[in-house]
Length: 270
Ligand code: ADP
Image 1 (cartoon, rainbow, N blue to C red):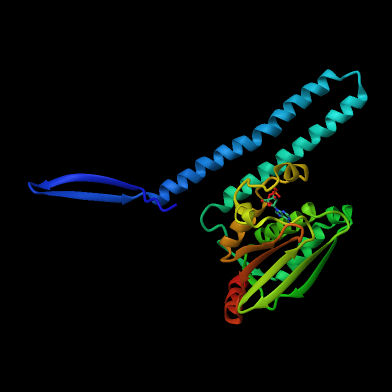
Image 2 (image 1 turned 135 degrees about the vertical axis):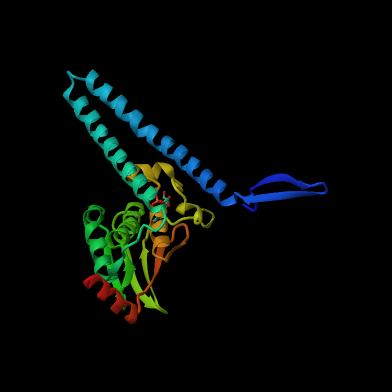
């Protein structure tokens, strides 16, 4: 931060003069560092489950005459395979979102429906922990974007709220239109996040409690994906949280006004 990377070339042009060419490499260098970092992180994250799959396969082979042990190791093998699947899925999703202009041909998206769908799709894990998810409020106008990406973002927030909350708690999902924007907030009664960690949780693979994240099936990429989906839609994400007082994640998106809606509808009809 605060460092400028310049590629400077000096060329003599006349007896008393030199030409100094400075090429600003700051952004390129930063992008390269982020990529190198990402690859290093991905390799590190993949090593553990890939190693475990190998060891568990060996353990199954070695317990051929003990059906109970075979069942036990197979269950664990299945879990590691699932973990690998979500990790690879999230890595691909995030790499795609880091590219330029993912949302090229956006659509008009009705958020009220989308939010309800996102809640419905997380119904099973919520029921499993006896967590009630309640939706309140509504959006007055649609937004413009990619419904699948917006669905992914909402599901990630609801999924986190369910995973980090204790059993028998409540999650509130609120939709609200204001000043040309619509915000959706997901409020849980989970453990909360210390203020010092609140900026970092949006970084790739950053977890406040790595053991808890892994144990609940997290990849450490969920919030990073939400952040990128919002950036691709001209929106943003913020968090309010305090230890012991739960967390509220809020995403805000620009609404489409009536004139733009007519233009878009005409475009979609053609
Ligand atoms: P993960 O797959 O680990 O959940 P995320 O990127 O979704 O990855 O979240 C990053 C970290 O932020 C989590 O590991 C967890 O420590 C914290 N976190 C996210 N959502 C919540 C929440 N609703 N309540 C408490 N902590 C949360």
